[in-house]
Length: 288
Image 1 (tube, rainbow, N blue to C red):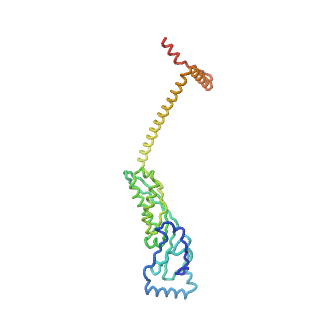
Image 2: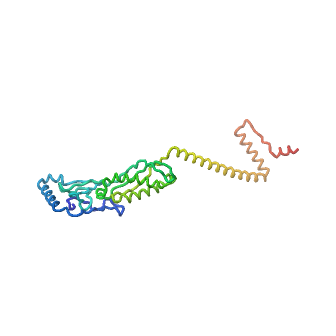
Image 3: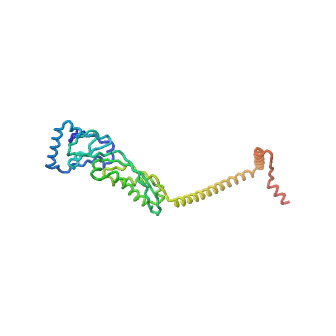
């Protein structure tokens, strides 16, 4: 049980470990509550004694494993950091608290119309994953940590993609995500928020740009196919030349090739057999 009568967990919660700049940075109580504050504390204790044990229902609070409670005493944050998980104690009438969920939350960044560096308009949407590593800072330093992180993520997405050309946006999504994560993490650190991951979900192009890119890709594929076909024809002609040179050295090889051709013709179309006439014989006939 801590100084306020609540049970405080001594070991760090797993969700609050990680970055050295985060941790569980508690905000110490500034100054004293003053004479009136001590008088009100005395009245609070008196009320608890008068209505005991019914006052325990108002004085004892419980927070879940994934929550932390930031206690305010007469408007000041109680020293020792956020309380929980488990049971903690409040003084009636002078203490109030706010629960903070420290689980990882995710936000869908709405599609942003972005003008890239090469003057192409694209619509990009993303998703961010973040968590609150310091409950006290997320309460006293920003009005709404979740909403502020979401708005900052949308602005950061526009700023980061505005410095990229279209080809970088389409191909370097991982580097864009890392850049956004580092920028957001640095900006949200005073709010007690740790940005764990950023992912670019989709990049949508105008219809005219899609058609132009499709035509360009088709032309590139056609040119590549023609080059591959020409290269294949060149290699095939070289192989045929080498085969012809080898067969010309032996007339028997030509005869065997001739018989193989007849065999293949007879196997496919056995009703018709074509006897090819050697070109050398025709040459001799033309000369005569």
